[in-house]
Image (cartoon, rainbow, N blue to C red):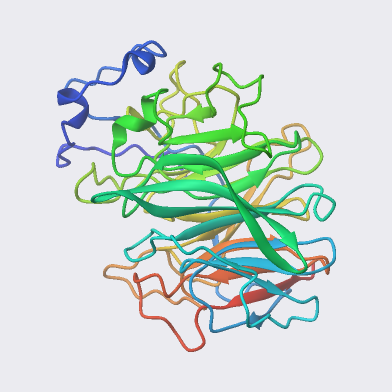
Length: 409
C-alpha cells in the first residue's frame, strides 16, 4: 500500500481542545503542535505491503470449540490446560482440557455494569506463576455514583476450583459507554499492564494526572512500581484513544499495542487511523493532537495505520507472526515480520475470514462476524472469540463462539 495523505477540508474537528485546556502536567510534556485551527495533525500512513484477503486461508482449519456464549472478551489458558474466559455480562467461566465448559461460573461479578454498548466485564489474564500464585485478574465497568460509570481492575484467588476473595487493585479508571480499553496483560518483567481508554473525553489522553487514554503498569499486588516513568503514577505510556490489544513478542519482549482511531460523529471522523504501535516507557503516542505518522519528535509514530477502520479487538503472537482480531471489518489479521535485519519491519499483512474491508456500499463476505479475544492453547492452536452479541450486529446461530484455528504451513 502506498503512503496516503488525506485532505480534510470537509472535516469539522471538535473544538474541545481549544476551549478546555489540558492540565499543567500534560502541557509540560510537549509543545502542542499547531495546525491553524486546533484540529489533530494528520500524519501519513506507514508503508506496508498490500493486504491479501482470504475468506478461507490456505492451510488453515477452523472448528467451533465453544458456543452459545455472551460476548467473549478475554481468553487465557492455565498450565493444567483449562481455559478461563470472560463474558461481558460479568461471568468468568472455565473449560476443561477436553473442551467441556463448567455450567457454574468460576466467579460472577455482581456489580458489573454491562447494560450499554461496550461496558461490562473486559479482559482477563492469569498470574505469571499460576497456579502457585492462584490469581486471576479482570477489568470491568461499575456504577461509581449518580450517572457516572468507572472501571476497575480486580483479582480473584482460586480456591477449590472457584474464584473467591475479590481484591480491588486499581479503582476509578475513567469509564463511559465506549472507549473503556479493558485489555490486561502481564509483561516479561512480571508487571501487569492495563489498557485504559479515553472514556469519550479526548483531553484525558494528554493528561498525566488522569488515568484515561493510557497504558498503565502496576505490580501483581496493585502497587506502582518504582521504575515507572513518573513517581507514584501508574501511567507507563499515554496519548491513546482506545487500546484494545496488547502483546509482548516472545524472545525479545518487544511490547505491541493496537489502538482505535477516530470514526464517530462527535469526533473528527477521518476514518479512522487505527494503529499498531511499539510501546516505549514514558512515550507519548499523540492522540488527540496527532493521528497517523507525522514524524514529529514529541510523538511515537505507529508502525501500521489503517484507513478505513479495522478496528482492533486483541493481539497475540503465534509462531512468529502477530495476529490481530478485528471488529468492524470482521477479520483476523496476520502481520508478518520476516526481515532478520529489522525485526519490527512489517513484511506481510493478510486478512483472514473476510473478502472486503468496506461495508457501506460494498458487499462484505465475512465468515464469523466480529472478532475479539485471542489465546494460544497448549495444543499449539489459536483460539478466537467472537463478539456478535455486543449489540452492533445481529448475532448468528450459536453466537457467541470460541473458534479453534489450526495453521499448517
